[in-house]
Every structure is written in structure tokens, then in C-alpha cells.
Image (cartoon, rainbow, N blue to C red):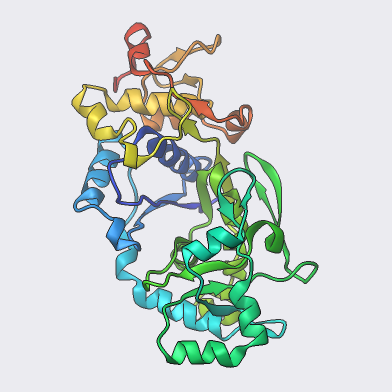
Length: 361
């Protein structure tokens, strides 16, 4: 594919950790692989402003520069795009799903949802039980009265009922292959604007990818289910006429790649809130950018670098390299070779002390 448009989409809730770099390196490599015509956009996903830390966006950009992961154009901030998300919501409100509103108010509290739902697949994902969807269907006057009284509510997007057209979403993933999700059984009606007025990740990311022309999406495998929902929202935005308002006449599906995740040495998912191997700490400890890139490239299956003359036929371990050097040997085939989640070795950085280092080590 030529003309790939990928995106870095960090949340400025803290310093990047090595898992974030791993995903961003994969995004960068995917966009620049092939004929080199691809580009990377930077989108700061600060739509949930209360979670954003002051200057975290600057830390992230400084770390990306330090790592040699460049992007094209000026950064886009979701916090400055509220009017666009409001327009998208209004467009969705005009769409009907069979005889039902595609978007509807939900008065349920989090406690209500926890009491009425059961976790799915052991990952704490809750399928909405449809309480307010049923309320709107059976008692529309009550819904109207609650809205007129100013009762606090969120807005949900409805998915088709079982066996309805569009109830099953399929897509092909570069790593995990063909994916099939039954929306009513596995996803459910989802909040797209919270009761505090903040637009959800699920709506904002679809709107932004659509308007920014993103066609190459790389992220963690924990978002496979979200991809099915986002494809549904994307289709609804097209049907609503939202895309045409912005001069978008053709809307193709992006290419997707969902990466295996990285756990810390104890088997716990890396997270910013735990300061799991954040880049600021690694930099202060003297770890070099080539070591971080080399280790992340190793996790992505890169086993050699032509420009350094380094080759590891015995797959003995990572070597330091730049993103440009990793690009010479990157293929999705190598990523697919190991779909299991990765455990970050406790002494991963010290491994470079006994290996041949490259020019950026």
C-alpha cells in the first residue's frame, strides 16, 4: 500500500513507558515501510482534560525526538476539537436504527451498570444491559420529562439487535488475522458522550482518524473489540453525511495491526499510572535511545540491521539501533511469528553491555 498515513496518539496522562514506545515504533515502521511515501501524524488525545498532566505533551514530544521517531506537520490536540465532536454527535442524532434512535440518553449511574452487568471474557468489559434503550422504547414521555428536568445523563450509540443487518462486524488484522464481532453480544450500546459532557475516546478517535485521513492504525491487541465498535461508528458517521460536510467523498476502511502487549517482569500490564519504566527514568539512568529502540524492535521481530552490519542468526537478543536501521529489516510477517504477549525482562537494558552496539548506542 502506498500513501500510508499513520498516527501517534498519546494520552498526556504521564511520561511514556517502554510499552508506548514499542507501539509508536511499530506505527512509525508501518507507515514508512515499502516505498517510503507514508507519513505519521501526531495527535495528543487530551479530550479527557481532567486526566491530562501539565506539560505531559511536551515530555512526550521531547522523548519522541530523543528516540528519533519523527512525525509530519503540527500536533493536533483533541481538547481543541470539541465543536467538531459536537457536530458529529448532532449528525448521529439524525440517524435511525430501524425504528430506533441511533443515539439516545442514558440515565444509568456506574453503580447501576455494575449491578446489572457481568464482566466479559475476564477483562472487566461490561456489556450495557440496555436499560435506557428499553426505557426510551417503552416510556418515551418519561425520557422527555427527565431531559426537560435537566437530569444528568450520558449519550449512547445503539448497535443493531441480533440478526439485524450490520450486527456483525468483521475486519482483517495484520497480526491476529480475520476478526468477527457480534456487536449486540460482544460490544453493546456504548457511551460516546459522558454525563460530565466529555466526549468519549470511542467517538473522538473515529472522528479524528476520519478527518485526518488516517488509514494505517497500529495499537495494542486489547483494542480489538474497540475496533469493531469504531468501524460501526465510522459507518454511522458516513451514513449521517458528516464525512461529506468535510469534503470526504470516499471513505475506505483503514488497515489495522493490533500488537501483542507488554507486561512487566511480574506479569502486570505496563501502565503510566505505575510509572512502569518511564522514559524519563530510563534517560536519567543513562539508557541510550538506540537501546530502547533496539529492544522494542526486537519485540517486533527485527533480528538484524544491514547498515550496522549486525546479524543475529541465533536470535540471541537485541542490539542497539535507530528507527531507520530497524526499518531496513521490519516485516509484519516477523511480528505475526509470535502473537503471545511479551514479558519485559528485569535486566533488559544490561543485555546491551555484552552485545555489539550500533552507531546510536
